[in-house]
Length: 290
Image (cartoon, rainbow, N blue to C red):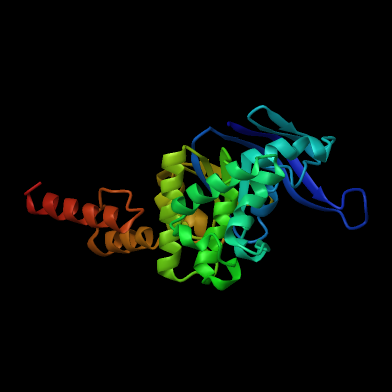
């Protein structure tokens, strides 16, 4: 499902004394099957933008097209229900949205709400549990008897059970320790590949944006400031720092090394593996053993 924003603006409390423009002049295309990261400082419009992806918000002006669906300011909410089955959003701390007596009932709730028969929903529950790395024996347990990390995986399983074509991740690793964050991001990367999902990641982690995304959208003061590949975006370190954004640690290390030795490291160095490879290539070139 291709996603296209055309001249999208959203004003909260429009036509009241409390009106506030959150995003404007949004022109953005996301091809089906892409992994896109949206970055920007707090208040740049990231969360407002993502809530337009399944009609939680409707544009004040402009249009949002998602596959065969088009969202406008005049769209009736009831007509957006089929779209919400196609676009799953994983909000921060999704485990806070668990409410059923058992894990199985919680995972089945979404599909059954969209008309999936009980037996089919239960079949999906077993399948998605495996996808998120949980054993089948948790199905009959209360979600509230699980660990925090397991609860988050159950909540994600409930979204996957609706078989979305697009999955939106809004700071999905918030509150997790480094290992938990890494495991969850690797899980999403695997799901992206195996299920051929369109994946949209909203994150403050420049390392995650650099490592996982094919394409990055930089938001600034309510509009799109720049788009490009991770290499293109993180090549202009000074501009990003001026916007109040971080850059991957490896990019800063590369820059400091180049200043120290007076030579350019021949690699984009967005990950530690790339940095190591670049340093080895530089040493080989300098020593004449390339």
